[in-house]
Length: 606
Image (tube, rainbow, N blue to C red):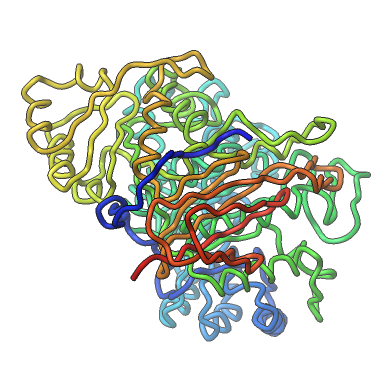
């Protein structure tokens, strides 16, 4: 078998505080909450119907929140009166929701609307108004005539000159030529929406990687949409968790069932129309489970199965009978409530320049500017080196599997957060290693923060271009403050392009920093620190083949066989899904079935 992750031969068990002492901030929960939330997407407007639904959600342990719930409008007051008594967090659909992403539109919080929403405030119930997929709207839909006709309706001819932008501008007006110009236009766009929604904004980004900016610009929650036809799931998690930790905000995950021209709904598979529907349409239930569990374990405050009102119940009305997807959701939420996920252990902090504007979807900086070689290094670091593996488990017959690209095996685990150069030194010092990537502006303030992080014990990794960008005196001051390492220039063997950090250096960092070594078949893995010790999540993303319009095919023989080698003294281990236990933790072997997740908890010495 091959090897994956960080490996050590002849390792030595050492005291944990000395070797694994990095303590990134704990996951931030939704304000007023004391636990993680699993939410339902959609809610009846009638209070009595809503109350009967909530009773089933409670009894069956299906959900503990709504995302989204009713619209943020005065007409929703009766529903708000009930939700205020219920106490569950609720994400509100925007007023005049069809125009929610249109800057200067009628989707804003009017006086009577806000008075109704304040019923939730007065009851101490967390609420925010969704701004969904705003990066995609800005770059793609602001020039889409068909979309504008659908949104503006009979007002299209009168308003198109005001709203529709030239396609080549990628949403901007005027077309910017600098990163600063891009930043300012997107910031203005976002701040209009934040103000129009009364400061109650949850940002939901899908195709774009603008999570750090949403946090900086005042979002109440940093939200993600994954699944759908959206790539880069794992790097988006790293951006969202980094933004959450840097700005002390909760982050959430919405798992979308759209997949090509198909969507998961209730009922039998129906491919007769332009959009396939039914429980077997859209993504596989296996991927949903993996996404739900990984979002929770990665530190999200809430996970939302999108369209769940239409896929969790056989009829969508009383008696609220659950479908197989609804049963799976209930099983998942019960599992989550029964286990302590702890704190994601991410010893590596990747820092990008404040104006970096990383955007994986368009392969263009800020969605419009051609990537520089340094920008390409950021992409290759995130999407090739850290959150991807060229090795996958073979599936008999090698069938085409469009769903395989949503989650990838990881060679070094899910072991990093991504933030911008607005981070403070005190925050950066929580990470054992800080890696600067791409082009960085070394202003006096940022250099001071780096020095603070170094004095706090962080090791700073620099690319030779970073050394060239600062004076000799500035570099010397950093070296006096702590450990500064200038990386060797190297070429990524998979891309043939210059790398932000050599693969060999990432491998040695993983050996040094991760408390558990992983050997064997390629798996996605993440390590958390909880009250008992360490927990590792192992995900086999192979063996389930799915297209949007066909049922999932599972290949039982595609099992991931792995060995776990802890680098600390342990008292025993237990796998959460199966209940299997180990009395000794020197080397653990286990199999992960196709499309499934396993969690192994190591109890450490007191």
